[in-house]
Image 1 (spheres, rainbow, N blue to C red):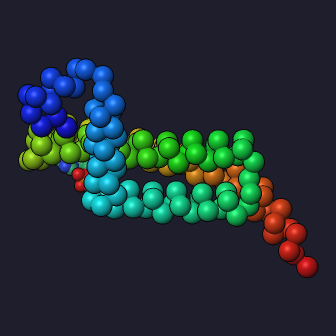
Image 2 (spheres, rainbow, N blue to C red; image 1 turned 180 degrees about the vertical axis):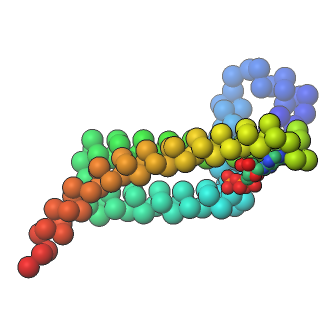
Length: 138
Ligand SMILES: Nc1ncnc2c1ncn2[C@@H]1O[C@H](COP(=O)(O)OP(=O)(O)OP(=O)(O)O)[C@@H](O)[C@H]1O
């Protein structure tokens, strides 16, 4: 967020300080997401469990690539969904069928990303989990 005209002026010049400030704004956005959106907390828990499983099962770098992609996909969808929801609520706080449709489509995008991520997670972590269970089976 640019708070003043002076900040706007300095935003046109490349400075390390300005780039660092952008990271702080982005971090603030992610923190807001986790503190205020229940779904984001579910994604956070799922991300931690997935990465914990990856570490525990010592999966390959190639598998990590898929897991990180799946985690990132869901966060991306959730962040855009929430941003658009916030914009919708600001533009039209009252009931409006078009706003409803926009929100439904955004929710559909998150659902789609989550289904794909779950599929990737199963395909990536399923075989090592299966092999581990096979190893401890009497
Ligand atoms: N202003 C509105 N006009 C019409 N329908 C709306 C409006 N706001 C919300 N809806 C309907 O209610 C649903 C839920 O909207 P809401 O803003 O509560 O999202 P949410 O359930 O908080 O989403 P999330 O779970 O991602 O936080 C929308 O998908 C839409 O169908």
